[in-house]
Length: 401
Image (cartoon, rainbow, N blue to C red; front, top):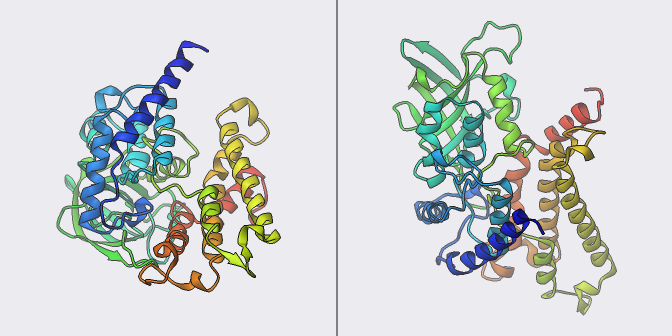
């Protein structure tokens, strides 16, 4: 074993011990399953404190530069921390858009002033970030962004609206895609990218109630909102390139994220454990041949996903379809999770129709809540259908029609 491997193994032992001693216990109120459902001040305060504790211990943004609050370590260390967070069923790390979209983008293309201004506060959770890409009536079609930003001296005046703004009602900043030029021949050329403040006059975030009854998404309105011209990231009109780079982080195509622990881990083992509580025709449901067949399919798919993820990190194994596995990452994992959670509700039979607020629901409607909440992950960052198009066109070379 090399010195580096020994160091990683020792770190794994240390992090497991730290997690066992420090992962907070049940706070006595419902915690979000993913970063898409932080809907109360109580949840926000709890998760902000947890994120700060992780960062203070040196376990967040471990491979980010030390001058901005990271540890400057090999990315493998963050991977070990993330696995430990899942294994210990730790609360999510809530400031995901800052940690996993904005932070890597600023480290990649931001100015030194941008990095010094924003990155440490992203890691500590002192400043919350949201994303202003999607708009009503245009969904994932970012090329049709209609929100306008018009230069007026040292400011831009913003008008329009965004939708599915996760954490928008709590956020301090938004990565905002807005149209600064309506005269370009290509719709992608008139867009600009801003690190926009949210707590200014003319910005209003209205929470959207989800099918689970929880909140987290918002619709955000801009009415003559003035933001400093210094918020522009990159060149005016160069927003499309910035947006595409951001989506590479969001979709897991490019590494650099501060932590992957943005949702509670719900596994095949969790599903099988729940199945011990159910029967079909008087026999344990796990003895049902069709159920067993479905479980085997899930096990094979989970193993294939795991192997594909490892393969994606080895360029020599990706010469046939470069970036093909990475581009399929979001599609594969979110759809697998959706079907797994649907199975958890399905095996309950009629009881699966009961929800969180029903006293007779199984485990407080855990599987039903998880299933419905999962739709946010199959839509955010580009829907499953969009992802399938990207893979078909850019990986397999299929025609658009």
